[in-house]
Length: 435
Ligand SMILES: *Cc1c(COP(=O)(O)O)cnc(C)c1O
Image (tube, rainbow, N blue to C red; front, side):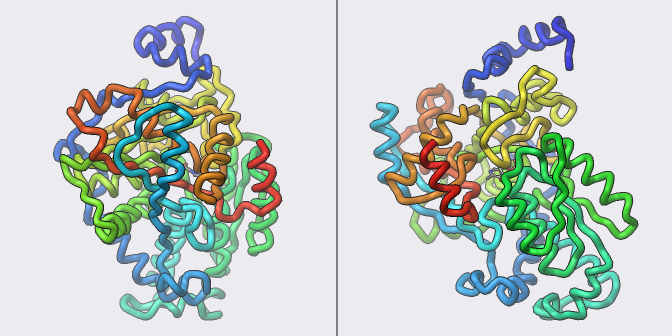
């Protein structure tokens, strides 16, 4: 916690903090954004392509172990859907003229985990498993990875343990994939994690440790416990390069989907993407990938709950993972699973500070309204956090972003990233819709 005077100094320097501390929704444009050509990162586009190849190697294993991925040949990917009825509903609700096209990237439909965490979480577990197996000589490079489904490999992995701290969705993806490979896996769940997520995980063979505190506390407890085991590996959402790379590969698939739909992206036809943000890994990784593919023609915005603007506070002050929302008197309490994060990822912040166009914040009430609007207009069901991007195009129109860059609103393609909700049980969804 800062002293009263320190807070005042921050507020003088960054007046938007005053509104944030009053829990008012804000729209922030990143003054430090760079042209892609002027960025400096710990990763390159080659790393994204290498990551894509890992998915390819594991596709036969995924296809074998998860029958629902057969029609997609073992790729974990989601559809891109145009949502014209939602667009009309947004326009009438906000008396705003949304020119351009509106699409939903349906990561709630990602196989097995039902959320964006399938991208990062599966990737990191598979990457670790591959390294272990090759180092021990139980798998050879170039071999068909169906071998990872054999009892021999499962027995090999059973001597190793994997741990992760989570508000729910990351735990589901790490827990499910690790258990499938044969690892001993423990998920340290924050207090706000939903009961059904814990039960589902246990039914898949994962150990669930219930923690009293929030996400950061679940992570630090899990980190300590896992690292105390010489054969333990901790998936560290607060600083993970591998989760980040797993997320980044989404961009290569999205490019193909846009090409198939004949959607052009260039300086006259910019792409705007709205991404719900927790620690910043998923939106940061996806943004990094998109910038490698589309350069300066893609504009990425993150969205955080008014109670948990961790990445915004980190980037605004430049202090990144050294500050938390609690330092500024915010309580990090939100219904938005996955976004209830008080402190941003160090690794992801070092990318986002150079690449993100802006961040806006949203109230929980609006998440529930958007959930209802999306189900009424399009018959699509997602979890509350996954709706946060839907208001992005409206927020953009209210801002000066387009005018400042001389961009014409009719030529924009908007993509709202729906990040999760595929595994929400029916009765739970009914409750969410009522709210
Ligand atoms: C985790 C999560 C996010 C955000 O990802 P971060 O890497 O934490 O920023 C967004 N939406 C949902 C549904 C999530 O589970």
